[in-house]
Length: 498
View 1 (cartoon, rainbow, N blue to C red):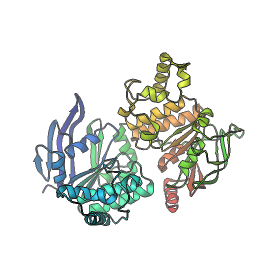
View 2 (cartoon, helix red, strand yellow; view 1 turned 90 degrees about the vertical axis):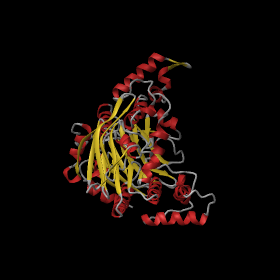
View 3 (tube, rainbow, N blue to C red; view 1 turned 60 degrees about the horizontal axis):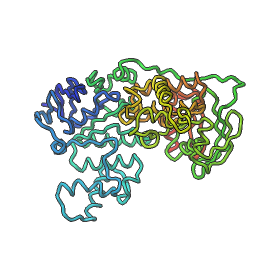
View 4 (spheres, rainbow, N blue to C red; view 1 turned 90 degrees about the horizontal axis):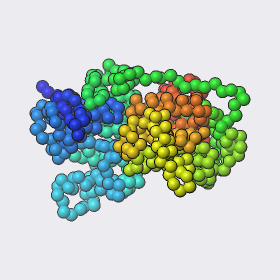
Protein backbone atom coordinates (compact mmCIF):
# COMPACT_ATOMS: atom_id res chain seq x y z
CA UNK A 1 0.00 0.00 0.00
CA UNK A 2 1.32 3.44 -0.96
CA UNK A 3 1.45 5.59 2.19
CA UNK A 4 2.69 8.71 0.38
CA UNK A 5 0.35 11.67 0.43
CA UNK A 6 2.36 13.48 -2.25
CA UNK A 7 5.31 12.27 -4.27
CA UNK A 8 7.58 13.87 -6.85
CA UNK A 9 9.32 11.51 -9.27
CA UNK A 10 12.24 12.66 -11.42
CA UNK A 11 11.05 16.27 -11.41
CA UNK A 12 13.03 18.87 -13.33
CA UNK A 13 12.45 22.61 -13.70
CA UNK A 14 14.23 25.33 -15.69
CA UNK A 15 13.98 29.11 -15.65
CA UNK A 16 15.40 30.97 -18.66
CA UNK A 17 17.55 27.97 -19.48
CA UNK A 18 18.91 27.68 -15.92
CA UNK A 19 18.15 24.36 -14.23
CA UNK A 20 16.53 24.96 -10.82
CA UNK A 21 15.61 21.31 -10.18
CA UNK A 22 17.39 18.29 -11.61
CA UNK A 23 15.80 14.82 -11.36
CA UNK A 24 14.27 15.42 -7.93
CA UNK A 25 12.34 12.63 -6.24
CA UNK A 26 10.68 13.32 -2.89
CA UNK A 27 7.81 11.69 -1.00
CA UNK A 28 5.90 12.96 2.04
CA UNK A 29 3.95 10.24 3.85
CA UNK A 30 0.59 10.71 5.54
CA UNK A 31 0.91 12.05 9.07
CA UNK A 32 4.69 12.52 8.75
CA UNK A 33 6.84 15.47 9.80
CA UNK A 34 9.34 15.71 6.96
CA UNK A 35 12.10 18.33 6.87
CA UNK A 36 13.35 19.78 3.58
CA UNK A 37 16.73 21.45 4.06
CA UNK A 38 19.23 23.28 1.90
CA UNK A 39 21.00 26.57 1.44
CA UNK A 40 19.40 29.51 -0.34
CA UNK A 41 19.20 28.67 -4.05
CA UNK A 42 19.23 24.91 -3.46
CA UNK A 43 15.73 24.46 -4.91
CA UNK A 44 13.54 24.33 -1.79
CA UNK A 45 11.23 27.17 -2.86
CA UNK A 46 10.81 25.68 -6.34
CA UNK A 47 9.73 22.36 -4.81
CA UNK A 48 7.18 24.15 -2.61
CA UNK A 49 5.70 25.94 -5.63
CA UNK A 50 5.50 22.72 -7.64
CA UNK A 51 3.72 20.94 -4.78
CA UNK A 52 1.29 23.85 -4.44
CA UNK A 53 0.62 24.06 -8.19
CA UNK A 54 2.23 27.46 -8.72
CA UNK A 55 4.89 26.00 -11.04
CA UNK A 56 4.54 23.12 -13.47
CA UNK A 57 7.47 20.70 -13.77
CA UNK A 58 9.28 20.45 -17.10
CA UNK A 59 10.05 16.77 -16.49
CA UNK A 60 8.87 14.06 -14.14
CA UNK A 61 5.52 13.54 -12.50
CA UNK A 62 3.51 14.40 -9.38
CA UNK A 63 1.51 11.74 -7.55
CA UNK A 64 -1.11 12.45 -4.89
CA UNK A 65 -2.42 9.47 -2.93
CA UNK A 66 -0.57 7.26 -5.41
CA UNK A 67 -2.32 8.68 -8.48
CA UNK A 68 -0.49 10.75 -11.08
CA UNK A 69 -1.73 14.33 -11.45
CA UNK A 70 -1.21 15.67 -14.94
CA UNK A 71 -1.67 19.38 -14.28
CA UNK A 72 -1.63 20.50 -10.65
CA UNK A 73 -2.97 24.04 -10.22
CA UNK A 74 -3.08 26.06 -6.96
CA UNK A 75 -6.85 25.43 -6.72
CA UNK A 76 -6.42 21.68 -7.28
CA UNK A 77 -3.59 21.58 -4.75
CA UNK A 78 -5.85 23.12 -2.09
CA UNK A 79 -8.62 20.68 -2.99
CA UNK A 80 -6.17 17.85 -2.35
CA UNK A 81 -5.57 19.28 1.13
CA UNK A 82 -2.20 20.93 0.50
CA UNK A 83 -1.71 24.24 2.31
CA UNK A 84 1.40 26.42 2.27
CA UNK A 85 2.31 28.86 5.03
CA UNK A 86 4.85 31.21 3.48
CA UNK A 87 7.30 33.37 5.41
CA UNK A 88 5.02 36.42 5.02
CA UNK A 89 2.01 34.27 6.13
CA UNK A 90 -0.18 35.77 3.32
CA UNK A 91 -2.59 37.32 5.82
CA UNK A 92 -4.61 40.54 5.48
CA UNK A 93 -3.03 42.93 7.95
CA UNK A 94 -5.95 45.37 7.92
CA UNK A 95 -8.50 42.67 8.82
CA UNK A 96 -9.14 41.20 12.24
CA UNK A 97 -8.06 37.73 13.34
CA UNK A 98 -11.66 36.49 13.02
CA UNK A 99 -12.05 37.98 9.52
CA UNK A 100 -8.81 36.39 8.31
CA UNK A 101 -9.88 33.00 9.65
CA UNK A 102 -13.41 33.12 8.24
CA UNK A 103 -12.67 34.68 4.85
CA UNK A 104 -11.80 31.50 2.95
CA UNK A 105 -14.85 29.68 4.29
CA UNK A 106 -17.16 32.50 3.26
CA UNK A 107 -15.61 32.69 -0.22
CA UNK A 108 -15.85 28.93 -0.67
CA UNK A 109 -19.53 29.02 0.29
CA UNK A 110 -20.08 32.09 -1.95
CA UNK A 111 -21.92 33.95 0.77
CA UNK A 112 -23.33 37.29 -0.29
CA UNK A 113 -24.07 38.51 3.25
CA UNK A 114 -21.73 38.41 6.24
CA UNK A 115 -22.88 37.17 9.63
CA UNK A 116 -20.47 38.64 12.17
CA UNK A 117 -21.62 36.14 14.75
CA UNK A 118 -20.67 33.35 12.32
CA UNK A 119 -17.30 35.04 11.65
CA UNK A 120 -16.44 35.03 15.35
CA UNK A 121 -17.71 31.47 15.82
CA UNK A 122 -15.54 30.20 12.96
CA UNK A 123 -12.54 32.05 14.32
CA UNK A 124 -13.03 30.75 17.84
CA UNK A 125 -13.32 27.13 16.65
CA UNK A 126 -10.14 27.49 14.59
CA UNK A 127 -8.10 28.85 17.49
CA UNK A 128 -9.56 26.36 19.97
CA UNK A 129 -8.36 23.53 17.74
CA UNK A 130 -4.81 24.76 18.33
CA UNK A 131 -5.45 25.47 21.99
CA UNK A 132 -4.36 29.12 21.67
CA UNK A 133 -6.01 32.31 22.85
CA UNK A 134 -5.66 35.27 20.49
CA UNK A 135 -7.97 38.30 20.50
CA UNK A 136 -10.40 37.72 17.61
CA UNK A 137 -10.96 41.46 17.23
CA UNK A 138 -7.27 42.37 16.98
CA UNK A 139 -6.00 43.57 13.60
CA UNK A 140 -3.56 40.99 12.26
CA UNK A 141 -1.09 43.67 11.22
CA UNK A 142 -0.64 44.65 14.86
CA UNK A 143 0.08 41.11 16.09
CA UNK A 144 3.56 39.82 16.92
CA UNK A 145 5.11 37.43 14.40
CA UNK A 146 4.42 34.33 16.49
CA UNK A 147 0.70 35.15 16.73
CA UNK A 148 0.47 35.78 12.97
CA UNK A 149 1.97 32.37 12.39
CA UNK A 150 -0.62 30.71 14.63
CA UNK A 151 -3.41 32.47 12.74
CA UNK A 152 -1.95 31.20 9.45
CA UNK A 153 -1.81 27.62 10.81
CA UNK A 154 -5.35 27.86 12.14
CA UNK A 155 -6.57 29.08 8.75
CA UNK A 156 -4.85 26.19 6.98
CA UNK A 157 -6.52 23.67 9.30
CA UNK A 158 -9.93 25.20 8.53
CA UNK A 159 -9.43 24.24 4.87
CA UNK A 160 -9.28 20.51 5.67
CA UNK A 161 -5.52 20.43 5.26
CA UNK A 162 -3.84 17.05 4.94
CA UNK A 163 -0.38 18.49 4.32
CA UNK A 164 0.83 21.79 5.71
CA UNK A 165 4.04 23.14 4.19
CA UNK A 166 5.81 25.55 6.56
CA UNK A 167 8.35 27.70 4.71
CA UNK A 168 11.12 28.85 7.11
CA UNK A 169 8.58 29.09 9.96
CA UNK A 170 11.01 30.02 12.73
CA UNK A 171 13.04 32.78 11.07
CA UNK A 172 11.68 35.60 13.24
CA UNK A 173 10.77 33.62 16.37
CA UNK A 174 12.44 33.53 19.77
CA UNK A 175 13.46 30.21 21.31
CA UNK A 176 10.32 30.05 23.48
CA UNK A 177 8.12 30.76 20.45
CA UNK A 178 9.94 28.05 18.49
CA UNK A 179 9.21 25.53 21.25
CA UNK A 180 5.55 26.51 21.17
CA UNK A 181 5.47 25.99 17.40
CA UNK A 182 7.07 22.57 17.84
CA UNK A 183 4.36 21.57 20.32
CA UNK A 184 1.60 22.69 17.95
CA UNK A 185 3.26 20.89 15.02
CA UNK A 186 3.26 17.61 16.95
CA UNK A 187 -0.40 18.18 17.86
CA UNK A 188 -1.21 18.64 14.15
CA UNK A 189 0.62 15.41 13.39
CA UNK A 190 -1.45 13.53 15.98
CA UNK A 191 -4.52 14.54 13.98
CA UNK A 192 -3.03 12.67 11.01
CA UNK A 193 -1.87 15.77 9.14
CA UNK A 194 1.52 15.69 7.43
CA UNK A 195 3.94 18.61 7.79
CA UNK A 196 6.73 19.54 5.37
CA UNK A 197 9.03 21.68 7.49
CA UNK A 198 11.31 23.75 5.22
CA UNK A 199 14.31 25.09 7.09
CA UNK A 200 18.07 25.55 7.21
CA UNK A 201 18.27 25.48 11.03
CA UNK A 202 19.86 22.19 11.93
CA UNK A 203 18.91 22.03 15.60
CA UNK A 204 15.24 22.46 14.73
CA UNK A 205 15.45 19.81 12.01
CA UNK A 206 16.81 17.32 14.52
CA UNK A 207 14.15 18.21 17.10
CA UNK A 208 11.03 18.22 14.96
CA UNK A 209 11.33 15.88 11.99
CA UNK A 210 11.16 12.15 11.38
CA UNK A 211 12.59 12.22 7.86
CA UNK A 212 15.12 14.59 6.33
CA UNK A 213 15.75 15.49 2.69
CA UNK A 214 18.74 17.73 1.90
CA UNK A 215 18.97 19.72 -1.34
CA UNK A 216 22.05 21.23 -2.97
CA UNK A 217 22.24 22.92 -6.37
CA UNK A 218 18.79 21.70 -7.40
CA UNK A 219 19.38 18.05 -6.56
CA UNK A 220 18.58 15.76 -3.64
CA UNK A 221 21.94 14.87 -2.08
CA UNK A 222 20.67 12.72 0.78
CA UNK A 223 17.41 11.52 2.33
CA UNK A 224 16.68 9.30 5.29
CA UNK A 225 15.43 8.97 8.89
CA UNK A 226 16.48 11.90 11.07
CA UNK A 227 18.20 9.52 13.51
CA UNK A 228 20.88 8.94 10.84
CA UNK A 229 22.01 12.59 10.99
CA UNK A 230 23.70 15.05 13.32
CA UNK A 231 24.46 18.76 12.92
CA UNK A 232 27.88 18.16 11.38
CA UNK A 233 26.59 15.73 8.76
CA UNK A 234 23.65 17.97 7.83
CA UNK A 235 26.01 20.93 7.41
CA UNK A 236 28.32 18.83 5.24
CA UNK A 237 25.46 17.72 2.98
CA UNK A 238 24.04 21.24 2.69
CA UNK A 239 27.30 23.02 1.92
CA UNK A 240 29.50 20.26 0.48
CA UNK A 241 32.18 20.86 3.14
CA UNK A 242 32.73 20.92 6.90
CA UNK A 243 32.15 24.18 8.82
CA UNK A 244 34.41 25.16 11.69
CA UNK A 245 32.89 25.00 15.18
CA UNK A 246 35.84 26.59 17.00
CA UNK A 247 34.92 28.95 19.86
CA UNK A 248 36.06 32.57 19.66
CA UNK A 249 37.98 33.45 22.80
CA UNK A 250 40.22 36.41 23.47
CA UNK A 251 42.67 37.27 26.22
CA UNK A 252 42.90 41.01 26.86
CA UNK A 253 46.04 42.99 27.28
CA UNK A 254 45.65 44.29 30.82
CA UNK A 255 46.45 47.81 29.64
CA UNK A 256 44.00 47.80 26.71
CA UNK A 257 41.46 50.59 27.22
CA UNK A 258 37.77 50.04 26.43
CA UNK A 259 36.65 51.22 23.01
CA UNK A 260 33.09 51.74 24.33
CA UNK A 261 31.96 52.21 27.94
CA UNK A 262 28.35 52.71 28.96
CA UNK A 263 27.62 53.30 32.63
CA UNK A 264 24.19 53.48 34.22
CA UNK A 265 22.47 53.29 30.82
CA UNK A 266 18.71 53.80 30.99
CA UNK A 267 15.96 53.93 28.40
CA UNK A 268 12.50 54.84 29.75
CA UNK A 269 10.35 51.73 30.09
CA UNK A 270 13.03 49.42 28.67
CA UNK A 271 16.54 49.64 30.19
CA UNK A 272 17.38 50.22 33.85
CA UNK A 273 20.93 51.18 34.76
CA UNK A 274 23.16 48.71 32.88
CA UNK A 275 26.93 48.88 32.49
CA UNK A 276 28.61 47.69 29.29
CA UNK A 277 32.25 47.67 28.25
CA UNK A 278 33.64 46.70 24.83
CA UNK A 279 37.36 46.58 24.11
CA UNK A 280 38.94 46.46 20.64
CA UNK A 281 38.68 42.88 19.42
CA UNK A 282 35.75 42.03 21.71
CA UNK A 283 32.71 40.23 20.41
CA UNK A 284 30.23 40.46 23.26
CA UNK A 285 26.94 38.60 22.92
CA UNK A 286 23.63 39.87 24.28
CA UNK A 287 20.51 37.76 24.51
CA UNK A 288 17.14 37.88 26.21
CA UNK A 289 13.47 37.41 25.54
CA UNK A 290 11.34 39.91 23.65
CA UNK A 291 10.81 42.86 25.98
CA UNK A 292 14.12 42.36 27.77
CA UNK A 293 15.37 45.76 26.57
CA UNK A 294 18.21 44.49 24.38
CA UNK A 295 17.08 46.24 21.17
CA UNK A 296 16.31 49.48 23.02
CA UNK A 297 19.86 49.43 24.43
CA UNK A 298 21.27 48.97 20.92
CA UNK A 299 19.14 51.82 19.56
CA UNK A 300 20.30 54.10 22.39
CA UNK A 301 23.95 53.35 21.56
CA UNK A 302 23.22 54.21 17.93
CA UNK A 303 21.57 57.52 18.79
CA UNK A 304 18.03 56.39 17.97
CA UNK A 305 16.76 56.74 21.55
CA UNK A 306 17.78 60.30 22.47
CA UNK A 307 15.75 59.96 25.67
CA UNK A 308 18.38 57.60 27.13
CA UNK A 309 20.28 58.36 30.29
CA UNK A 310 23.69 57.39 31.66
CA UNK A 311 27.26 58.06 30.60
CA UNK A 312 28.84 56.88 27.34
CA UNK A 313 32.56 57.03 26.62
CA UNK A 314 34.40 56.15 23.43
CA UNK A 315 38.14 55.60 23.72
CA UNK A 316 37.91 57.14 27.18
CA UNK A 317 36.20 60.38 26.09
CA UNK A 318 32.61 61.28 27.05
CA UNK A 319 30.29 61.49 24.04
CA UNK A 320 26.69 62.50 23.41
CA UNK A 321 24.69 60.11 21.19
CA UNK A 322 21.38 61.89 20.57
CA UNK A 323 21.06 61.13 16.85
CA UNK A 324 22.19 58.67 14.21
CA UNK A 325 24.49 61.40 12.87
CA UNK A 326 26.17 61.54 16.29
CA UNK A 327 26.70 57.77 16.26
CA UNK A 328 28.12 57.73 12.72
CA UNK A 329 30.45 60.63 13.55
CA UNK A 330 31.83 58.55 16.43
CA UNK A 331 32.19 55.57 14.06
CA UNK A 332 29.41 53.44 15.47
CA UNK A 333 27.60 51.15 13.03
CA UNK A 334 24.28 49.36 13.53
CA UNK A 335 22.99 46.41 11.50
CA UNK A 336 19.26 46.00 12.27
CA UNK A 337 17.50 42.66 12.68
CA UNK A 338 15.03 43.29 9.85
CA UNK A 339 17.41 44.06 6.98
CA UNK A 340 14.57 44.09 4.42
CA UNK A 341 12.60 46.98 5.93
CA UNK A 342 15.24 48.73 8.05
CA UNK A 343 18.63 47.97 6.52
CA UNK A 344 18.37 47.95 2.73
CA UNK A 345 16.98 49.82 -0.26
CA UNK A 346 15.72 46.72 -2.07
CA UNK A 347 14.93 48.45 -5.38
CA UNK A 348 18.38 50.05 -5.53
CA UNK A 349 21.69 48.60 -6.67
CA UNK A 350 24.37 46.95 -4.58
CA UNK A 351 26.58 49.98 -5.21
CA UNK A 352 24.03 52.51 -3.99
CA UNK A 353 23.32 50.45 -0.88
CA UNK A 354 27.01 50.11 -0.03
CA UNK A 355 27.72 53.82 -0.55
CA UNK A 356 24.58 55.14 1.19
CA UNK A 357 26.41 56.04 4.43
CA UNK A 358 29.69 57.18 2.82
CA UNK A 359 28.64 59.83 0.32
CA UNK A 360 31.32 62.21 1.61
CA UNK A 361 33.91 59.62 0.56
CA UNK A 362 32.84 59.62 -3.11
CA UNK A 363 31.73 63.21 -3.75
CA UNK A 364 33.53 66.36 -4.64
CA UNK A 365 31.28 69.20 -3.72
CA UNK A 366 27.89 68.09 -5.03
CA UNK A 367 29.29 65.84 -7.78
CA UNK A 368 29.73 62.08 -7.41
CA UNK A 369 33.19 60.86 -8.37
CA UNK A 370 32.14 57.79 -10.35
CA UNK A 371 35.58 56.20 -10.49
CA UNK A 372 35.93 56.53 -6.73
CA UNK A 373 32.40 55.16 -6.22
CA UNK A 374 33.12 52.13 -8.39
CA UNK A 375 36.47 51.53 -6.72
CA UNK A 376 34.93 51.67 -3.23
CA UNK A 377 32.13 49.34 -4.29
CA UNK A 378 34.49 46.82 -5.87
CA UNK A 379 36.70 46.92 -2.78
CA UNK A 380 33.80 46.05 -0.47
CA UNK A 381 32.28 43.43 -2.79
CA UNK A 382 35.63 41.64 -2.81
CA UNK A 383 36.33 42.10 0.92
CA UNK A 384 32.87 40.85 1.95
CA UNK A 385 32.73 38.19 -0.79
CA UNK A 386 29.32 39.42 -1.99
CA UNK A 387 28.01 37.12 -4.71
CA UNK A 388 26.66 39.74 -7.13
CA UNK A 389 27.34 39.89 -10.89
CA UNK A 390 28.19 43.59 -10.54
CA UNK A 391 27.61 46.68 -8.43
CA UNK A 392 24.57 47.48 -10.57
CA UNK A 393 22.73 44.32 -9.44
CA UNK A 394 19.57 45.08 -7.47
CA UNK A 395 19.93 44.16 -3.79
CA UNK A 396 16.42 42.68 -3.81
CA UNK A 397 17.67 39.98 -6.21
CA UNK A 398 20.38 38.72 -3.83
CA UNK A 399 20.13 35.86 -1.34
CA UNK A 400 19.62 36.65 2.35
CA UNK A 401 23.29 36.00 3.17
CA UNK A 402 24.52 38.34 0.44
CA UNK A 403 22.03 41.02 1.47
CA UNK A 404 23.41 40.87 5.00
CA UNK A 405 26.95 41.25 3.65
CA UNK A 406 25.86 44.36 1.75
CA UNK A 407 24.60 45.90 5.00
CA UNK A 408 27.89 45.07 6.71
CA UNK A 409 29.86 46.45 3.78
CA UNK A 410 28.00 49.76 3.94
CA UNK A 411 29.01 50.34 7.54
CA UNK A 412 32.56 49.06 7.23
CA UNK A 413 33.13 51.60 4.47
CA UNK A 414 32.50 54.28 7.10
CA UNK A 415 35.57 52.93 8.94
CA UNK A 416 33.42 52.00 11.92
CA UNK A 417 35.17 51.17 15.20
CA UNK A 418 32.11 49.87 17.04
CA UNK A 419 29.74 47.43 15.36
CA UNK A 420 26.30 46.62 16.79
CA UNK A 421 24.71 43.57 15.17
CA UNK A 422 21.06 42.84 15.92
CA UNK A 423 20.31 39.30 14.71
CA UNK A 424 23.30 39.17 12.31
CA UNK A 425 22.32 35.91 10.60
CA UNK A 426 18.50 35.86 10.84
CA UNK A 427 17.12 34.14 7.74
CA UNK A 428 20.59 33.26 6.44
CA UNK A 429 21.52 29.74 5.33
CA UNK A 430 24.19 27.71 7.10
CA UNK A 431 26.97 28.31 4.56
CA UNK A 432 26.49 32.08 4.45
CA UNK A 433 26.06 32.10 8.21
CA UNK A 434 29.48 30.52 8.74
CA UNK A 435 31.06 32.99 6.29
CA UNK A 436 29.45 35.99 8.04
CA UNK A 437 30.74 34.69 11.37
CA UNK A 438 34.24 34.39 9.88
CA UNK A 439 34.06 37.96 8.57
CA UNK A 440 32.94 39.31 11.96
CA UNK A 441 35.77 37.48 13.75
CA UNK A 442 38.33 38.77 11.24
CA UNK A 443 37.05 42.33 11.69
CA UNK A 444 37.40 42.03 15.46
CA UNK A 445 40.90 40.55 15.31
CA UNK A 446 42.46 42.35 12.33
CA UNK A 447 40.74 45.74 12.49
CA UNK A 448 40.21 45.88 16.24
CA UNK A 449 36.47 46.43 15.98
CA UNK A 450 34.47 46.22 19.19
CA UNK A 451 31.37 44.16 18.42
CA UNK A 452 28.07 43.83 20.27
CA UNK A 453 26.19 40.81 18.88
CA UNK A 454 22.49 40.56 19.79
CA UNK A 455 20.99 37.17 18.99
CA UNK A 456 18.44 34.50 19.94
CA UNK A 457 20.70 31.86 18.39
CA UNK A 458 22.49 30.33 21.38
CA UNK A 459 25.06 28.35 19.33
CA UNK A 460 25.86 31.54 17.42
CA UNK A 461 26.58 33.38 20.66
CA UNK A 462 28.61 30.59 22.22
CA UNK A 463 30.70 30.08 19.10
CA UNK A 464 31.48 33.71 18.31
CA UNK A 465 31.54 35.72 21.54
CA UNK A 466 34.26 36.05 24.16
CA UNK A 467 31.48 36.99 26.61
CA UNK A 468 27.71 36.40 26.63
CA UNK A 469 25.34 38.60 28.63
CA UNK A 470 21.73 37.69 29.40
CA UNK A 471 19.24 40.53 29.78
CA UNK A 472 15.86 40.44 31.51
CA UNK A 473 13.41 43.26 32.22
CA UNK A 474 15.90 45.96 31.39
CA UNK A 475 18.82 44.58 33.42
CA UNK A 476 21.85 42.36 32.86
CA UNK A 477 21.24 39.24 34.93
CA UNK A 478 24.00 36.81 33.89
CA UNK A 479 27.45 37.00 32.28
CA UNK A 480 29.38 34.05 30.83
CA UNK A 481 32.96 34.06 29.56
CA UNK A 482 33.81 32.14 26.38
CA UNK A 483 33.64 28.39 27.00
CA UNK A 484 32.15 28.84 30.49
CA UNK A 485 28.63 27.77 29.53
CA UNK A 486 27.14 25.04 27.38
CA UNK A 487 24.21 25.42 25.02
CA UNK A 488 21.95 23.53 27.44
CA UNK A 489 22.95 25.77 30.35
CA UNK A 490 22.29 28.96 28.40
CA UNK A 491 19.03 27.68 26.89
CA UNK A 492 17.73 26.55 30.28
CA UNK A 493 18.63 29.89 31.85
CA UNK A 494 16.81 31.78 29.10
CA UNK A 495 13.80 29.53 29.64
CA UNK A 496 13.68 30.41 33.33
CA UNK A 497 13.50 34.10 32.41
CA UNK A 498 10.23 33.65 30.49
